[in-house]
Length: 450
Image (cartoon, rainbow, N blue to C red; front, side):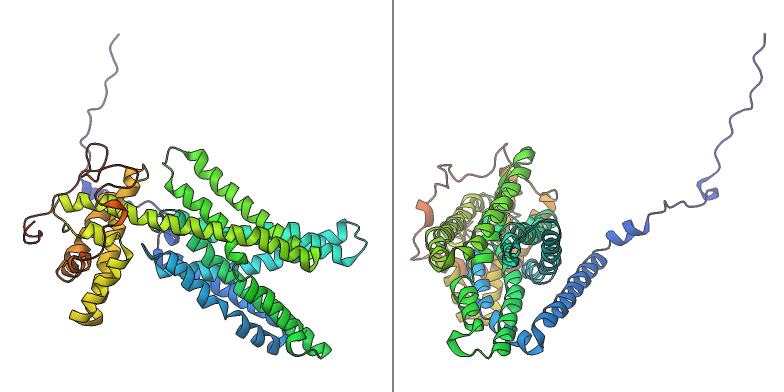
């Protein structure tokens, strides 16, 4: 039997005969890939939340009460922000991240908490038989508000942890971001409480130190301005610890922030519940529990900041050995005193512009050390090589002004952390097979004498 004849294979037509095909993308995917649209949408969301919360607060307090509450609530904000910025001096968090955190706390988290707490209170009234109205507010403040409010504030920390990992290196970054978020939340909440207190005083004719406004101001602004930042800092502490864990430790990287968030809720509930214990009970909780926890967190943050300086001293000598920086720089950059002296030297010789150049050089060099540190601990940036080259380029652009100032600042400043031995007893050495290859500085880059 003969095989059926088949038509000969035809040559495919030339490419020009094909119509150009471009896969259609969903509108949402196109919009999401546009950074400007994402930022604009986020800004509009926060602005909308701000307008809604402004209207709700003004409706409760009245215009005069709102203005009084605003004027009093703003007083602790600069001090709290300055304190968190002081903690964050080694590698400062970008202002855009801090602005987002504050706006989220002041607008989005407060709005969600106000609506959710009101809904939860109504649900308690309709489903549970309370003999007195005060029991409802007590249960809501102790068990509902901490869960709702800490969850709302934690979203800001989570978003920055996921989408700004380059700026999220450890405990200090987590505590600072969480603290700024909580500062924004407390700011809006204080407007509401102080405004309501003023409106109440106006209704009953109370004035002076015996007024509800004075008592509320003393408790919320003078005595416990750190309350909300303290609670939410527990959440930031958890995310900061998770950022230091290697990528293969997935369970811990999820479990640690969850446990930290639950701790924040517990502290918040304990603080709110202490208000029902009376004056002495409240003071006992304040003195025996809240103040020690605040002191412990402050010590831990300062210790972490010193550890960040050790990281700078540990990882920058590799770049010095490769010719990118000069010998004094690892020691100058790991000393806050030497950093300040270098900026002062530059300011005396070249004015504010030179001082700003030195500050930028310090910032880029610190980011370079943390970039290599993340790779060393098993959490490298996906764009490690490109980011490293970018930072090295920024250093090269500023080295003619910054390197002499840093060298002068090193003279007379004791070498931090005991000299050439890095934190943990590991000698400061260039990277070997265990880490990324170190790019050698070209001959034209190296300073004279290197």
